[in-house]
Amino acid sequence: MVKSLPVEAKEALDKALIEHGLRSTRQREHVFSVLLHKRDHPTADEVYARSRREMDSISLATVYNCLETLVGCGLVRAVNYEREPTRYCPNLHEHAHFQDRQTGRVYDVDLPPDLMKKLRAVLPDGYHAESIELYFHGKAEAENS
Amino acid sequence: MVKSLPVEAKEALDKALIEHGLRSTRQREHVFSVLLHKRDHPTADEVYARSRREMDSISLATVYNCLETLVGCGLVRAVNYEREPTRYCPNLHEHAHFQDRQTGRVYDVDLPPDLMKKLRAVLPDGYHAESIELYFHGKAEAENS
DNA sequence: TTGAAAATTGGAATTATTCTAATTTAGTAA
DNA sequence: TTACTAAATTAGAATAATTCCAATTTTCAA
Image: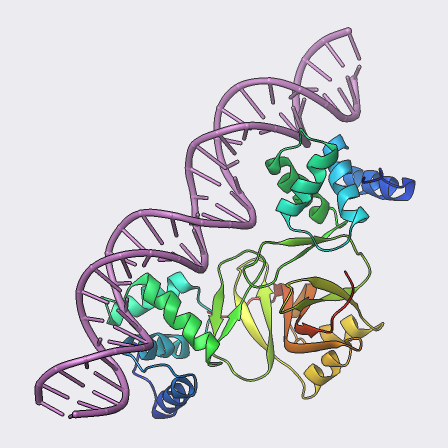
């Protein structure tokens, strides 16, 4: 059972939507709550399945729309490994991703402060990065869950 | 006109193919030469178009097969930005990629020695990276070509 | 030279995602 | 409240990069 949005998340959502000139809808709120509730980098299909458990009328197209909206508002990041389906991540701290080769599971990797600054400094003059994505792929030692 | 493979590239290709228990074919050699000749991170479709200019009988499926083989042999890297078509890069030096938001063009970014080592050190115990991909996206000041 | 395994081929199939056009809804103004 | 209008949702069709398939061709070792 996905609990509804905590107030601070609801506030962040409404604020971001208003800032972007977008409306608050049940579906957007629900999709956001699904992402926050289980932060395991689900695909759109998985978000759809989870969303339907509480909101059986939501459509796949709407899930895609909501995810795109959330990414556009900066509340969620899209994570792409090779040509696998896009995964979604509501962690807004500066972080990288690690995918386990065997299970395909994706984990967040915290980054030391200033690492992004250092990476940005690697760019030659004339290159200005708006986003930096750091993807690790390999073997993660067995964990529970 | 795509010149045929330089000897050292031909040798590297044959060596890599043999190491992986694969055969040398005209198509593999030609696709590799196309990648080496213009290193602008072409998509499979673009590689197909270029390959056909000299080898009109090559099929799109074969181009995909060859690219996959070259990547598997470690002679070429696959570059993925969001859900755009995969691009291919024959630069084997340690490097990152930068995509210009406006043109979509992808550039190689040289990395200082040891940067990859430092990035690897960011991983918590139990995580072992086999590959690390660093993607920049933003604005590159206008260049010729 | 030959045979078997591997590679190529054209076209069909797949699949994540986007598009479309009709319906519903949110938010505002009267 | 009510009514309006633009925005959002919806189901299903369409798209596009890639993969699959079964038949043919090629490589290479014996």
